[in-house]
Every structure is written in C-alpha cells, then in structure tokens.
Image 1 (cartoon, rainbow, N blue to C red):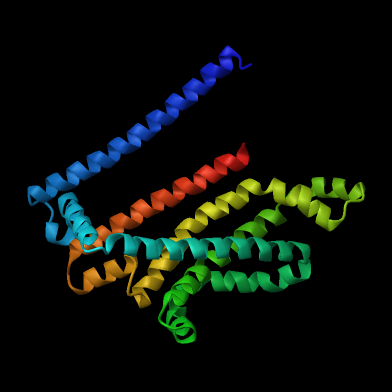
Image 2: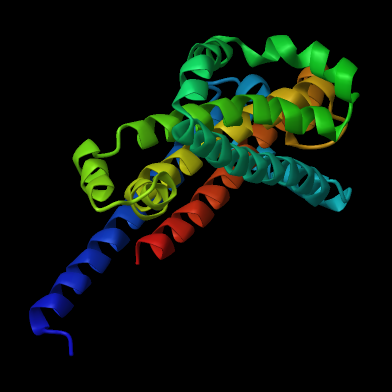
Length: 261
C-alpha cells in the first residue's frame, strides 16, 4: 500500500507536469496570436512570413485536394525507415567496435572525418547510384543519423565503468557476459538519448533528400512553394514538420518512460 507521503509526491509531480504543459501551450497560443496580430497590422509582411490564418487555409486546401495526408505519410515513412535502420545498424556496429578494439582504432578517424563532411555533397552521387526516388532520400537520411548513432553509442560503451568491468572479469566473466550484463544495461539511457537525437538527424536527412529529388513529401511542398513564390505553402510545410517532430518526440519519450519503469 502506498504511503500518504508518496501519494502526495506523485500528486505534486503530476501537478508540476500539468503546469509545464499548460505553460508550453500558452506560449504557443501567444506566439500564434502575436504572429496574426503583426500581420493584420502590416507590421510584418504576410506575403513573406504568411500568417496563422493563411497556414490554416493552405492546410485545408491541401486536405480538400487529397494531398495533405499523402505528403505527411511519405515524409513520416522515410523518417521512420531511416530512424529504425539507423538505430539498429548504429547499435550493431557500435557493439562490434566495442568487441574488437582493433577495428575501433582503425575506424575511429574515418568516422570523425565522415561525420564532419557536409552530407549534401553526397547528394548527386547518391542520386546517380540509387536513382531519383525514395531510396535516395532514405540513404541521405541514413548518412546523417547512422554516423551520429555509431559515434554516440561507441563513446558511451567506451566510457563504461572500468572498475565494474575488472570486477566481472575477476569472477571469470567473458566479454559477451560483460556486454550483456554491464555494457548494454549500463548505457541504456545513453542509447535512448541517442535515439532521441536521431529523430532530428533523420528529419534533417529526409528533408534534405526531399529537397533534392522528391516529388512528394513535406520537403517537396517547401521546395515547390519556394519555386513558385508561394510562401504560404513554404511556411505550411515548416509547420507540418514541427507538428510531425512533436509527435515523434512524444512517441520516443513514451518508450523511454516504459523502458525506465
């Protein structure tokens, strides 16, 4: 049975979370009201920066044309596929590098060099190799998210408590047992943090790819809107990206809470 003090603690924690959420919601509403007010008063140019009303009307127009959910789904699909593949490969390659110190030393400078390169420079090469299609977009996203994932998880594994490793070795534990019972569980939070970071990386890679080759997706809406000087479509694309980012962030946060319970 839960004590009264613990119940009060949970209540305070819940009230604090509600207060944070309401403050965030209020700031968003305040921003939208201010944005609309400034455009109505001609203080900012609604042709360049649009307005909440124009963004809303553009979303409704896309919905009526049966284009809204198609563009959202395409971008969401590309992000999810690159996110899943990038994290699985990142964890797998980082594990291999932890098991094999020789390979870790060999590939360490190459990972740093590749990570420092602007990935958009590989865009034309990727298009030539994989075609101007969704595969190129996913590869572009993987180029960004995978390297970050490998570097982050490898560094986390390498910084594991050396004393705990020596203690397990003194009891006769082999490398696989150390990995299974110490390295993975001990770095669970850092791995999840890497996954959260990879959401933004996958977004960057996906939109970058869509700007280069896509004929569908939110990135396509943005580049098409800029080409025809329809800034309402450009800002609407950015708003849709923000909404999609929030949704994916909430999903990852949910799985993070489950893993910690």
